Image (cartoon, rainbow, N blue to C red; front, side, top):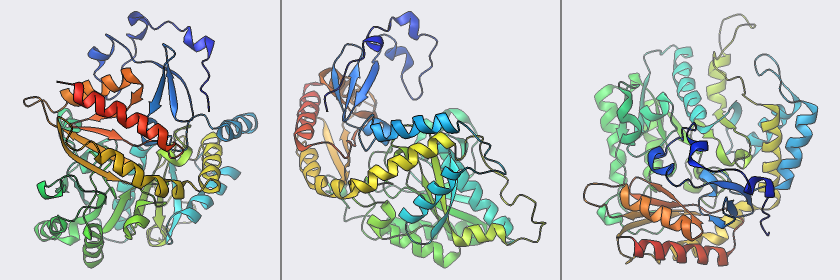
Length: 449
């Protein structure tokens, strides 16, 4: 689809003085405000910037607009809902769409994950899952089971629980004491460099879970929290058998397994969920992002019947609250309308199949960057990939930053984070668009000092 420039937006003043009040998240504000990158509209696989340039969206927004931008089906559903019911209280009341969306999510998630608790973001989904795990053991008469285990370079949002179980050090360093958590090692190993898809080496790293259980005692551990593949940490794909071994250890020691599928969910791997892709199924699953195709903030936590019944099986009066947790905007009517429309698109256009078909082509293109100056590793799964870049002295961030900005100037948006460039295009992109994107990326990597 041809992107249309909106005259009103294109005439908005972008002077530095106008942007000063805005404090950007996860951004180098001082550097950015010298030369702002301003997006004014989007359509299909492209953004339009304030100078009228088309920019290919190489990260589906922030891993969330996987079905393409400005889908009229979602816009129309949101508009209808705003004219009918703009908001209703989430506590003690429901509206029809929240029931419908809960059932849609139940039907699409793996069998056994049957109870849906709504949030407004991936960060909130993780916070909810962590509280749910601890509260579950409290209800089961084991309140001492509070300890949490995540992974190094895992990303689970920006709230205190998420940065505690996640282990990306710059996200944790300024904030002092966090929730006590242990971390399994990542599997970025020299022998896995330039792996295509699931790497062969590193299953022995799952043994660390057993070591942590021996150290702390299973009676003190509530849950293990992992992403099926680590997205923001640099598209780190677990080796063959790794997640299966975590599942077996959790079963053996009566520990809950939580999958953070905020990035991997809804088709990114070429399977509907990462759980299906790896054949390993959690007790609790965290969702967000593509749930509404990025249009309205929304997340969800999907729990097994075992978890849900653990809360319901109580001797307290029926009118008392079983899970003292929730958000003002949990199951927001407008977000539910967007979610239902997004799920229609996802299912009717068979977008998981689309990813499965495009993934081999994407893999060839991204691994075609091997041998390019500064490239030290490449990792990929489905329509997600990361190119690891050699640092400048001890500065991991500088060179990816320079490459990312150069890509933007040439018409490609990719994410730079840590020592990686991350690519996760919309599922609806064409091969010719991917060709152009990787040509730009190759040129920009080669040109940066």
